[in-house]
Length: 312
DNA sequence: AAAAGCCACAACCGCCTCCAG
DNA sequence: GCTGGAGGCGGTTGTGGCTTT
Image 1 (tube, rainbow, N blue to C red):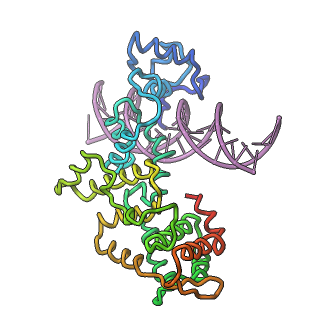
Image 2 (cartoon, rainbow, N blue to C red):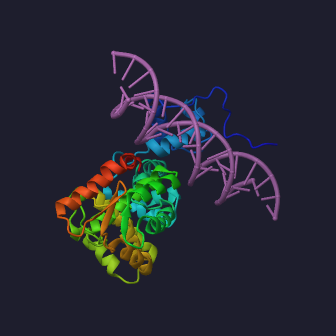
Image 3 (cartoon, rainbow, N blue to C red):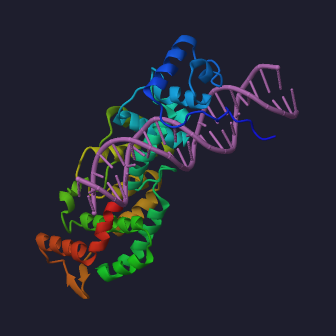
């Protein structure tokens, strides 16, 4: 014998609820309570499945539901809870008064998840994405050879090896970071002092104290960093490279050696730039000339890659 | 102005857990 | 301890509205 369906679906309405149906459900529950959901539709005069009534009430009609946009505080709470609880949406919702699991789940999938991905953070593990770390290693060996020469042609070689837009954009971000770090050009008017990203820079007082408490675990620290990255983006600060920020913040917190290695690669001076098979020494160039070299590199050598920066 | 594409979110589906009998 | 119904949960889909072409 198969499983008995929760209701006889013949003749029962599906799809969006009408205001009249909503009112019937509200009136009935206010008078009698919901009781057994299975019998509620018949008693309330609704041609709906009991389960549909329960969901409509729980996710939309319940009087204690808070509707409207999520505040930044709520968003931070969701991220922190998700880093601990994972996709246990009901558990997350239990800690956010007035919000339903369905609403939080939708908000996560449509907003937060995408934002974390753009920041180079894996929304499942809340850690730097492994593909980014692997790519940084690849770039280190292929892009910056022993003579510390930045070769556009080799970058194009990489393009052939990578097969996702996302990875290409990551490559661009790393390259831009390289140029910013060495003050080769003023990408987005970045101040040198904003690099490397200081994860405590935008903390509020309570979070700062929380982070100061050395007893907090690594995962708690990483959760705090995630929130700071998001706050950092929201503040419309100059955005040197969100990816590089993520690298800095995460690596500082998770693996100092790894961070030091990456840092040393990125801080190695670039002495020449190879464009169109001719190498130019930039040691004696003016700042404007350096700007020009880098602008040319990004604007004319790999315009198709730059276009892809919109993909993430 | 119309068509196509995209996005957000309400609602549904099917599996799981709990618990009374 | 077993069974089956009710409710809970997370993943997925459908749809309406907005934006882009």
